[in-house]
Amino acid sequence: MIHIVTPANADRYADAMEQAWRLRHAIFVGEKGWSELARPDGREIDQFDTPHAVHFLAMEDDTVVGYSRLLPTTRPHLLSDVLPQLCEGERPVGPQIWEWTRQGVARSHRAKGRVVNPVSIALLTGIVEWGLAHGVHSLLLQMPTLYMIHVIQLHFRPQPLGLPVQIAGEEIMAATARFDARTLAKLRAVRGDSRSVLVSEPAYLVA
Image (spheres, rainbow, N blue to C red):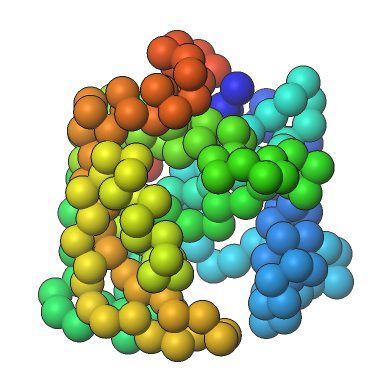
């Protein structure tokens, strides 16, 4: 199940968020080699982990096995403050557009030999469910160019914001990805389960 963490319920997720910070460090520092994010305490926390961020935790019992984060584009975010070179025109901003960042799955739950990782799809399904419930219709992405086809296959409608740029040895591009009920239906079909992935918890929009 996917748990949403905001200031409304963060006190009940203190241990889970500690796991999430350490999972992020293991993935983005330990595996991807983003050394500028390294911290002696092994917790990857950046300047965007403010009360305005919405955290999505994939959990099995009390263990965090996957993580994603949404940031409001009406406040500082990666494209505005860290990677502005990826956007050649006017940067998309608005309460209906949220930036999707820090997607990661624990090594123990990565699906070998499968095109689609069940934890990743569950996280994305939860994000779309949450978005549709809160008047959000688009995600802002920074991703390797090869991911664009996967975004389309999941029935998002992506719009590139500029040409790819070489970052850390990869061709990275920015795009918006619009979604609607058809996107959610496709994600649920890929999962093989039409039920909601979200735990019934109060989680509010902190834009």
